[in-house]
Image (tube, rainbow, N blue to C red; front, side, top):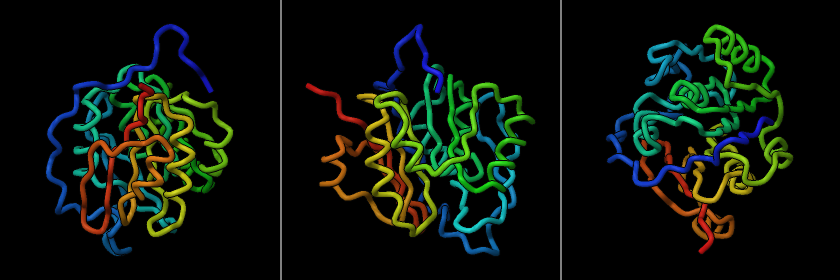
Length: 220
């Protein structure tokens, strides 16, 4: 993993915008017949670029309106940030971050079909700051150096038991003051978040999906 030696990680302060309404978005509540075959990057240098969505079990890309809200929360530019898109799937979150200037985006995905699709998109966009690792997301985060990323995106298969352990793993590798984004059917358990050193920052609901941005507590 490439570390930035010249400048410290940038952690957004005071840049959070009022979230856009996302109550009508359907998120991972889509049925198989309504799943999109592609999504588009919504901001940055690759705005409107198409990202294919493969027909794979559990794959439900983060809807456009939810991504609009998320990147309003984070700020419209992620220049200099180091990001992980765990359970990358279509890569909608990771490519969005790279499009908005992230210095490093690691996409972690274990499905070989999805890895091939992500690799093809990376090549098509000439996305030099994106790295794709074929690996189990929990195992990958367990091996990653502590406090080495500014934001970790977590969008595991819907109704899987993976979100709770993924939050713990992500909390270890994000810098103090950095962010963990999580999507799932329910909000994360507050005592578990506190034990991991994560604090609720922003939250919303899109159909059956609860999405929230958590912040790593900064030691007093």
